[in-house]
Image 1 (tube, helix red, strand yellow):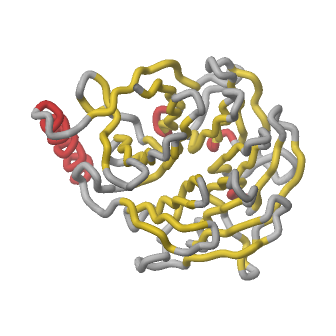
Image 2: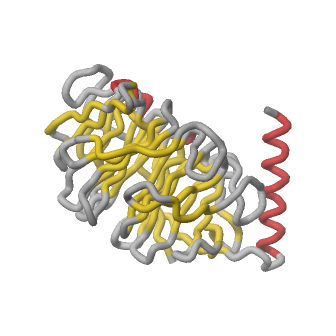
Length: 305
């Protein structure tokens, strides 16, 4: 562990040196506020965040087995759920998504299902997950604005599932491995304009497919230099088609354009910003980036410049 921490520290110092030498482009961000408190109980190991069109933020508070809702200014609205297997109860929830109608989808990993809530957090329905007869432990869920279909990463099956809005399994792809189209512990995913981007954690890459699972592109490779990935965890795609990828070990967020070229690393004052174990990300319609900092027990909100 000490070796890895030392290596990461040395690389981060190197990145700062690159920034000073103007070899590393910095995308400036401005801090706005943080989502941390939740009705008198702090967040505990939050893992993901989703933002609705009205600015509401939905945070997966995994350590407390609940979903926390905030308004556009960061004010606490409600906390939904507790540990359990009933309606609007959760067991180790991990991922969250919001569709264009304001419905909220929660990857309820320990209960092997996706729970669907309305924007106020009221339970609507539960979608049990089976792939080839095997219960799926979902790591994340995303919704296609084009088709309305759901896409779910199976952490234990190393596959991506495609579901109808009613939960019917329409197909799946992947399997454990290092080859193109295979995964080793896929985590978060994002869908935009018919493309499904999947964070392939232990293969240190993001794989991009069409909505039928046909391979399209690989973004990133193992490494510790800008444009490479060491331990990718989160992904978001903004309205301009830019890809934001968090690296939990390198403690940075890198940004790639719609042609998959590295644009910059997010930072302030011309230097990379160091996040605390960044995982799930969300890009809002009004130009904000939400970064879930798991080990700091918060979601930090920034204005993109």
